[in-house]
Amino acid sequence: MMKLTREGIAYRVACELTEGCYVNLGVGIPCLVPAFLPAGREIFIHNENGTLGVGPPAAPGAEDPDLVSANREFITLVPGASVFDHAASFGMIIGGHLTHVVLGAMEVAANGDLANWHVPGQKVPGVGGAMDLAFGVPNVWIAMTHVNNKGEPKILNACTCPLTAPRCVKRIFSDIAVIDVTPGGLALREVVPGLDPAAVQAQTGAPLSVAQDCREMDVPESFNGVRLIA
Amino acid sequence: MIDKTVASCREAVASVCDGATIMMAGFGGTGVPGQLAEALREQGAANLTVIHNGGGDDDNGLGGLMLDGRVRKLIASFPNSPRAWAFRDRYLKGEIELELVPQGSLVERIRAGGVGLGGIYTPTGVGTPLAAGKEIREIDGRQYLFEKPLRADFAFIRAHQGDRLGNLRYRFVMRNFNMIMATAAKTVIAEVDQIVPVGTLSPEEIHTPGIYVDRLVQVERLSGKAKRPPEGSA
Image (cartoon, rainbow over the protein chains, first blue to last red):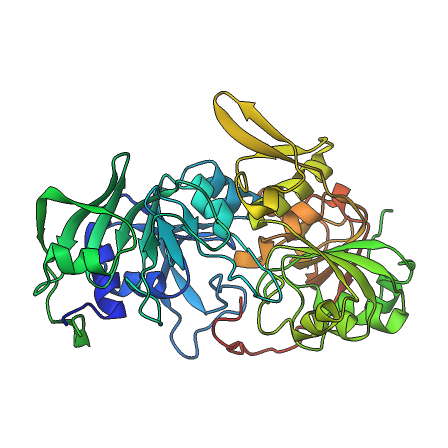
């Protein structure tokens, strides 16, 4: 079965981020997005620890210990970037100033409920900034595999894991589909080449309606030597 | 003449007593007052309540205080990083109480404490397990939950430069929790890379005005060269 690689999902997300977006990227697949943003498109990447305008990773030998990402990777800043403290950083998040956040997920429900912070049975809990991002940012996008590593659907009628935030997800980018969360339920917008809507529905734990303009996903086999389709 | 500088980290933390509540700034290894925390390890105060974003790294600084069994309670948002193993061990044995707070709520609770407010109403957490037991209030059609302010006996801060008046300047992402924690404790102690003469820092580049700071001490950077930390260990 044809599906997108993790990089393929990131590529598809990157296509959708338009000039002028202020976006925070979660760990996992979302972190791969910047590599696929077209050069010259002005998009500002926000980090919880107080940066707006994160650029490429720092080159070896040019690392600055006071300039790191929220994941502790050495970064650079783009021209026009700014730095600020945690109160300003989370004010941007909770105040709704960022335009997008791209997050991974364990489960997403048909009404947009998101569960991505706590696995039942996890011994030490930790939430970090996940809830603030899910509650505060207007466009919560999810980049994830369509099913978990047991092959079970991650898109469900109702989440079974503790919620990060209720009714927050607007769009899901998976390895086989793009799905919008609408007031009327889940709308299938795009399907990976070679698959039909019924096959996507078979891997989804909640009803999908096929959008009128539902189309085949436009993702090349590879990009700069990186395989996008598995 | 006002002079808030002290000669050593040992002197800077000497007044911390058993049972104290301490804010420790820093995030993901940057802006962490690690040498003040190490001095506190030597000093011996125990039964501490610590407010910090994470659970401490490895076996030094806050991680070392965890390892030594000196922390009674941790108020944090992300105590489950792999490097917080010392906290994890104590927590799983039931030896440390954990109050888990979303990161933005942690920030705003400290900010509220620092500016004299009685708490905050935040949307973050409504309808999730972290709202348990908290007041929910509808304001202009949206639900918010009440979070109490946080204040502390001490705040440990790290900055790049400071002067004898306690004015501080940070580099890049060092600001993180440092700027707000510096406002929310009775006694604020800063470790800095460099103490500079008054007037060296222009008014426009002072991030933490000296009014907030009680003591500051110059420390050597532990590693002169940047060292790449393990990936995925926020």
